[in-house]
Image (cartoon, rainbow over all chains, first blue to last red; front, top):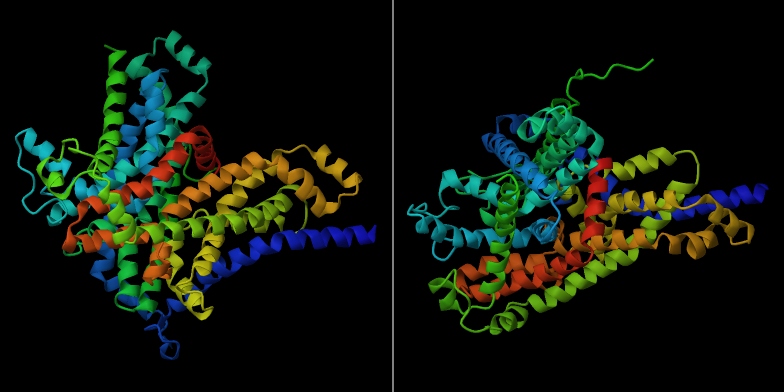
Length: 301
Length: 272
């Protein structure tokens, strides 16, 4: 019996250790080290690593470029978020119908998401290309003039262009998420609503929209995480330019670390980004809570 | 009218996805002058030379092989390590179980790029910078959260009697796992493999920092480099061929396993 217990313990330890070891070494250890690195001035040569306390964070507070980048992340979240929520729900609703169109849409929906963000970024760079991109020729076809410096060269249009590429690549996932949510609403509820005279738009605002609160919350928290994580699309399409007008937190972090070799400062940017991500997730969870419930859930006795 | 509106919306949605993708594929078969003169037109003839130029001239061939090595190598380590941990976490009760499972799950929530600086120096001190085994180990680490989460669900759903019967037959804990439980969890392994393969094939941020030598580059790195250098050489056809070479394998895998992929994605979204 005792041999059996020891054997069981040895089995559990042996089976857990490869995963725990790799996760600990490559995920948890760097995460813990990040806190320490953010308190140093470090140019990348180990002997020149000096402890500077909170100096990096003090500098961060004054750093216009960092706050600008954070602002761009939040702008992307607002604009792409509103666009996703207002497009995904009608498309998901339309997907309820069976038939060829629905099947084609379901197959195509995730294509923009399963291809690499590198492909998305480069494809959109060329769709927006002033000399042979499709977007400009469409605009000319309806009699308007496209931006003279090109979409990505115009300071005020660079970030909206990035938002367009992100929307194109992300929308499908949310369409399928809402489609699953709508399918999850029981037929009884929908029929009862119909018997009560709630159809069409009225049924949508009174029944469907409130009942989808959980799916909506999942969607906005996902959007928040994904849009704070934006890196490749911005880095490849605009490099944060022109004039930092499309800089986001991760491109700023990358530049500070691997272009300017300010490793301590870059890691302080990383820690602040993590705090921003956690704060944002919590805020979104509260804002998109179940309709009619208080901010803090009451403890059950 | 009421029937028509949803169909019209679906048509617009389909066109919005399909036109950019179709344009990418068509452009990859055009000659340089054609790309400029007829952006909406069909190629006069299939200009396969773009693919040869991308594969050989632009070095996407070796990068394609590297991507296959990294993706396959990561899966070869990830699936056994993930399955073993998920199995123990799903079917054995022991102190610390909740903590370990929770720690794995939390890894799905935080952006991996945030630890890039400490990770870069960790890899440098281990001598693993600019090596494919190094990138594979890092990929395994960052893919474990999702893999353990998915396989945990599959092992949890297997009936208890099977494991008990195998133990009574004298299989032992490890034998029960390898001979009885793991084969039963095969659908879960397939899902985890497809999902991770797509993500690994496309990964850019970590590879950008951890691989800087041209001969170790993966496909996304090589394509990104090509898009930078093409500004000077402007062989756009080869660049579009590169985009297609990267995108078509994942689109094919997705089209084949569509329903399973959607199901797993949504399960992760609803429970995560």
